[in-house]
Length: 244
Image (tube, rainbow, N blue to C red; front, side, top):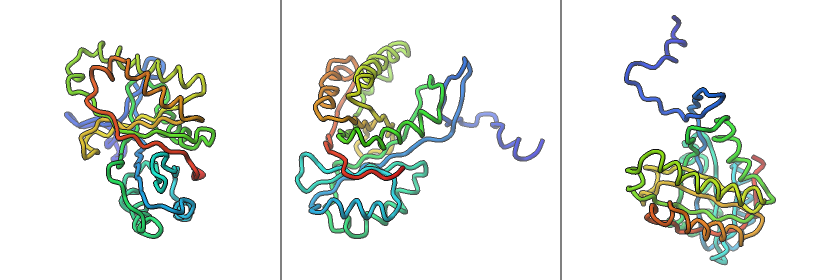
């Protein structure tokens, strides 16, 4: 046995942290995922200058103008390697024009794509589709927010948890199939300073349907009984997309 093949065999007791899917009745695995970082700023009188700086640095992502702050912007940046956020993106945010803006830490969000075990194509689910949703210029409106799930949810039987999650999945499919909204779901366990569990992005061609999604979510079992908090909500409209 050569060293490369030996390295692929897990030692007894080794942790398998790969994402799991299901294809043709067989469990599939992929040890890759997409990280996304959301950062908001105020005192931005020239959003185009910020967009130009992102473009010049080769940053993948989207820049939004803030619907609730006349001088606010928000940036969502995806990358497989989290080092990107503490190297390249950090340098951009520490140089003009971003260094002259007011950072809004209350909107800081960092999450990772994840699987739930039934995805037939893990690469598509974890890496391709999230980027495609961000890149969709026909869906410029966005609502980004974190959520904290009640710890009681983890004590529920597995089949009950699946029923609750399926209810949310049905809601997402209804709005998605109608062309009103697309959702980006990221896990942020241990990545969020407020102990939030997930980061959610709702994207669409109009703002009202995104608000309607949240309104409908209030009626679900998960939101009404097993969430401790939602938000803060960043509401914005995209004025710049990278080429992805």
